[in-house]
Amino acid sequence: MNLRKFLTSGFLAHWRLIAAAILLALLGVQALRVAGLESSLNAERAGRKADHLSYENAQAQAAVDAYAAKIRKETEDAKKADAADSRADDLAARYRALSLQYASAQRAAGKPDLSGPAKASQGPDSTSGAPVIPLGSILIPEADAVICATNQGRLEVAHEWALGIGG
Image (cartoon, rainbow, N blue to C red; front, side, top):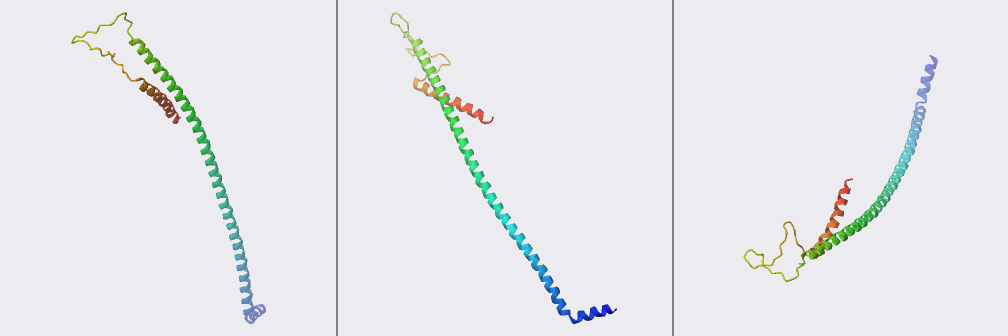
């Protein structure tokens, strides 16, 4: 019991000093906590800054990659366009040659091989000298046939290109 009296009397005599010591201890603990939180906050800020730089670098690299892919695609498309133009020109030349060959064959077939002048009938049943065009035939000027041949070559190449888009 003497211990209890001693502690009680010691506490009562020095309660201000004991309260100040406890208060200082609590302030020290709180100061350590604040210092720890500040270091954690600084570490988080540094991490966010590093992440931000990483995002910017990744974005810049993606832009460079996209631009390079665009250049590659444009180069590839230009090569394909040149090849298609060449093929269209070849087809157009071939069709023009066929049109001219057909026209010359038509001219040769239209020349009469008569030894004397031909006599045309002038009766009501005659065609009065107009040429007879067989059913299913269309006569067009030679210049139009050349234009048609050029367009046909272009259209065939465009059709092949369009079929190749899906695959």
